[in-house]
Image (cartoon, rainbow, N blue to C red; front, side):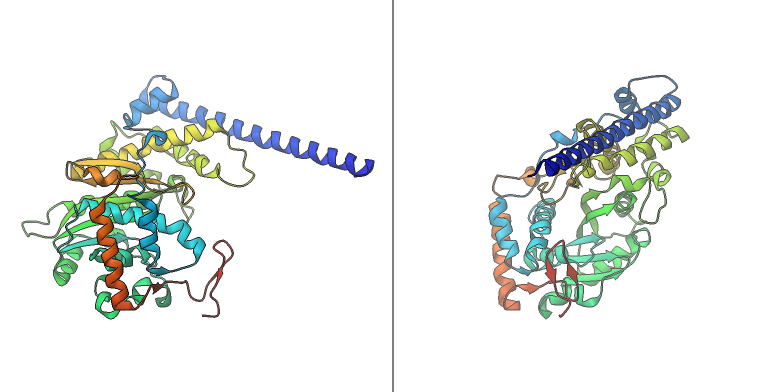
Length: 403
C-alpha cells in the first residue's frame, strides 16, 4: 500500500472504531434507561423500594430455573433421529438444517407425553402453517393431527397434499382463530376421527399467541357440562418473540391482555405492573438481537433480557401447572437452528423422565420412527416432496419458481 492508501486506511479504521464506541454507548444508555423505568414501575407497584432483582422476584414470583440452567431436551440420539426424519422429506438443504431438529424434538415430546401409546390419540396443532410437522406426526407416529390455522397457505404449499391417499385422513385442516376453537369443536372432530386423547402443540407462536394457546389448553381441560369429551393430556409449546407482547405484527400492544390472562399468577395487578411488563417485553429482544450481524448488544443486556423472559415465562408455567398438574421449561433445539429455543411442557404429574432425553437413547421411539419411514416409503414410493413450489429464497438457497 502507498502512504496515501495507508493514511486512508488509518482514517477508515478510526471512523469504524468511533462508530463502534457510539453503538456500544447507545446500548449502555438503553440498558440504564430500561432499568430506571423498571425500577420506577416496580416501586410504584410494590409501594417500597427494592433492588431490581428483588422487586422482580416479589412481583412475579420465584423463577424455577434461569435460561442458562434450563435442561437441554433436543431429543434422543440426535444424529440417528435426524437421519431417519430427513430421509422421508424432500426439502431444501438449508431449510432442513434449520427446521428438522426442531420438528424432531417436538415429535419426541409429543410421543413421550402419550407415553408411547398412540392408540386413539391425536394432536391439536395450533398455527400449523404448511403442516410439515403434522405430516411427520401422522405418517411416522400414526397420530391423527388437527391443524388449526387462521389463514392456510396455498394448496400446493400444504404438506398434507403430498401424503398418499391412505394417510391423508390423518391430517385434518380447519381454518379458525384459536380464540374461536373450543371444546365442542374438538369433541366433534374427535368423534369423527375416533380419538379419545390429545396433546396440544404450538411451534413458535409469537408474543400473545403463546398465552392464547395456553388459554385454549386451559379451556379444553375443563369438562364441558356433564358430557364426556376427548381428554387433553398435555401441552408442548415452543415460545417465540416475547418482545411482540409490547408491539405485535399489527403494531398493537398485547401487554394488558397478557396480564389479564396470567392474573392468577400475580399477587396483584396494577397499571404500574402493566408498564413494567411492557418494559420487560421490549428488552427481551436483546438476547435474540445479540445474534445479528454487527450488533453492539452487551453481555449485561443479554443477562437482563434472559432474566426478564424468565419471570414472564414463570407466569405461563404457573398457569399450566394449575391446569395440568405439572409443567416444565426446557431448551428444545440447538441454538444454531433457532435462538427461540424455550419450550413449555405440561401434563399430569409426573412428567415422563424421557421427556428430557438428549444424548441418552429412547429405543422404542427410534424403532417407531424407523418402522414409520418404512411404511411411508411402501405407501408413497419414496420421500414426500415438500419443496415450496413457486417460491424463491436467498436465505435458504432455493428457487422453485419454475415449478
